[in-house]
Amino acid sequence: MSYGAAAALQAAVFQKLRASPALAEVPVHDAVPHGGGRGTWVLIGPEEVRDASDASGDGAEHRFTVSVISDAAGFLAAKRVAVAVSDALVDAPLTLGRGRLVSLGFLRAVARRLASGGARRIDLTFRARIED
Image (cartoon, rainbow, N blue to C red):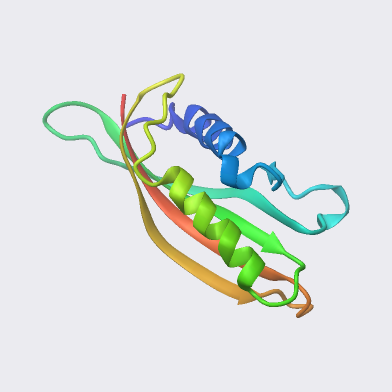
């Protein structure tokens, strides 16, 4: 098992989301923008990695979160972007700079209002299996 492919996976996810026509007008970040961000935007967030080595070789399971944050009224705008994120990533044939992506799937989503009540956040969790 290795954490070696983590940066390569993040870079490939970022590129895939930026290249998605359905997300052409939506900013994608890997850190909260200065000033907290306005409008609707995507944030590549936390990741948890576990050993997934087997008899065929070394590997890791990466569970990572991509969040959609929106100050639009209601959840509809955020949900439309969340669908586009999911469509772009599920079973995507990502090419990594290190390691080989075996599978990429959706695990869960949690939609909620942020503490201020004026913004919405949808956290989408994905699972990527990578062989070293």
